Each structure stands twice: as C-alpha cells, then as structure tokens.
Length: 77
Image 1 (spheres, rainbow, N blue to C red):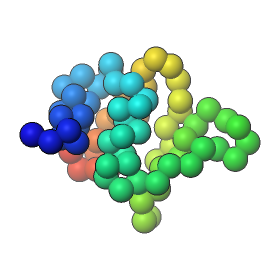
Image 2: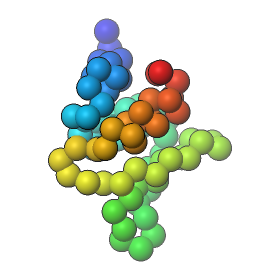
Image 3: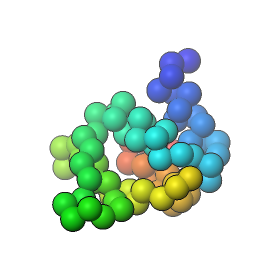
C-alpha cells in the first residue's frame, strides 16, 4: 500500500483526528493546488479544474465535516 493510500485510509478510519498537514498532503497528491486567502485569513483554498474547496486552518485538528467533504470530493467515500 502506498503512502497516499495509507493517508486516505487514516482519514476514512478516523476523520476526527486528522491534522491539517495530512489533509494538505492528500489534496496535493490528488492534484489540487493550494493558495491562502487574499486578506491573511484562516482559510486555505484548493482548486483542481472546476473543483474547489475551502479548508479553515485550525490547530491541532481539522473538523470532521471538512475531512468528509475532501474524501467525497476525491471519490474515496
């Protein structure tokens, strides 16, 4: 199993305890480009073609709803 698949499996099994860095790597591995907000906000925006998603950066973990949205967006669930 590759590292990419392991990260996705980790996100599926435990979406409550996923760090921002792991979610960022999942999105980048799937081909999304990241940019931060224009006015030094707390959200990061990811884009791949016509697909867009905004993820708020909050430590230490990302909220479960955003993890599930990303997994649905990449077709993992």
